[in-house]
Length: 289
Image (cartoon, rainbow, N blue to C red; front, top):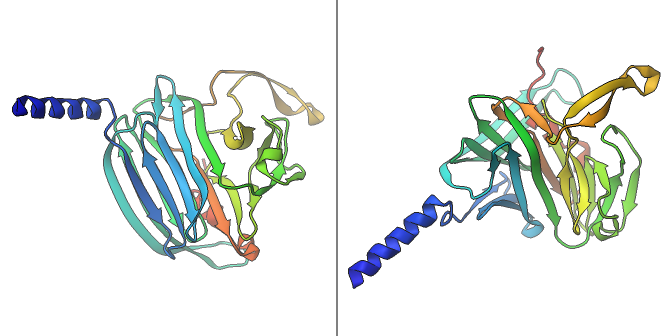
């Protein structure tokens, strides 16, 4: 009887593993100065959370990338985990500084299904991105990038009713709760606690729509313009390509690529935002195409 029970337990555990269950784990990346960390939680989906100086500022938030026929991050099964560190500098061709220090700790989790999630922790902020390894082009139906802030920070919210905005007035809200449902804003956004400010931004956006943030069920989540299906010349001077009809997906792109970084930058010193170079550091070098 004991032998039968042991065999049954082994079979059940094997079945859970094959289905993507039994793979629950938390993986943490901490900034070089130890003040900032991002934790990946691998459960039925992938969630991340962010702590700054021992306080949780973003509670577990869902991240997924939905492709035609597959959702990356759903029922994740990790295959390989790689950690690395970098401590170097980048020369600047112009600006107030001759070079920027590039120091971070990185975690890359490779999953079954030809994709990875990469996380980096700098002293200036944390960031994550998806990476895919498919042989042919892929269609991205949607992306889940959620930002579940702890507490009730005030928000500098650059509201926009369209997906063609590049600079709009920053509307001040006392809390996320005071923002109307489905109201959206361009990035970056600033969230303010009593002693900490947090900026949300993105970087390395190529062959992909820019991220907006939308109020959704009491929190904020990313939203992206749909892929154009039909355009016409119009708008200013009748020389702007105006989208008249869209598809039911957000991008058609190469199957083997790295997707844009989603960035969280907290600080208890407002002056540091003036010299925060994280968006630049995370972007690919300029190149002729």
